[in-house]
Image 1 (cartoon, rainbow, N blue to C red):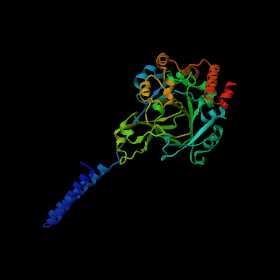
Image 2: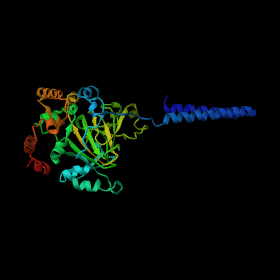
Image 3: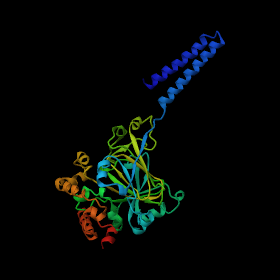
Image 4: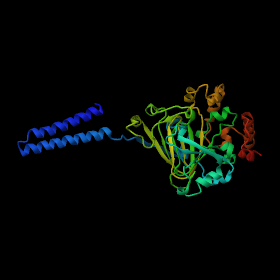
Length: 393
């Protein structure tokens, strides 16, 4: 029965109960009985209204948290890869990665800055504000106490580590089960700019979004040591039609959502409540894996630095290929490279040891890294960044 019909029936019952009390005033006993009936009818109506118009509750499941040493490549591929998110504790060394340490290492690196706008139709509701030296950004948005920082609050987002701060590459250690990446193979080991660095001051956020080409990714987080939460992440299941009906693809973003992931409105987006969400709070040294195609949103609870990488492994390859089209530059990279690339990824799956960045990219050492980056810059007709010039001179 529709809401209006149920409400109308309840109101009629109340009206009839009240009318009955008027028609039979012969005794105090009858009056008392009829009043009781009227009150009962009102109570039924109120109960129905509460049930019909109550805000539904979204089911939120905690993300599994597993110590890094307990996660084998076989377990990851069986239970999590391309299936559900997982937090690995103790997975990333904090040494050299605290925001102040990073900026001191690469003060001349440049970072793009974004403000969050919940009404924006851009990717992740991020509106770019500027591009400038990371040291200046840090002085404005990290050094002062949170209450003394400029508004709007700006997120330092997606700084390419290989281009802007290659000195930090020696500090990168990637777990064995995250060692596959077709993009490093098909770009002659140069990659696509990942891993990247994100500088998240307390209170900054990223709106609900899906990563480019539905790629999976991981993010490691460093900030205040101890048990203080640095990021809160909410993740929805990939390719869930109950969610996708409240969004659309645009030229500016691969997908825009119309609902608030933290406080969805049941009166407007009731289908969201037919789904569920995963949620976790990340602490310093944690690494989070998110399967490809999963809508997710982030709030920074305290100042932190994130190191992130999108990648393409064997588990996510079939979905990526199905969604490829002629306009996609990433799809074009893989064209004609099928058999040998698949063989190389399968070979990488045999590895059960953590990888430094050079080993992950298939590079011998720093010298080959610089050689590959020079070839890439020449091909793209781009000048070396200050970071690469200093690192490779």
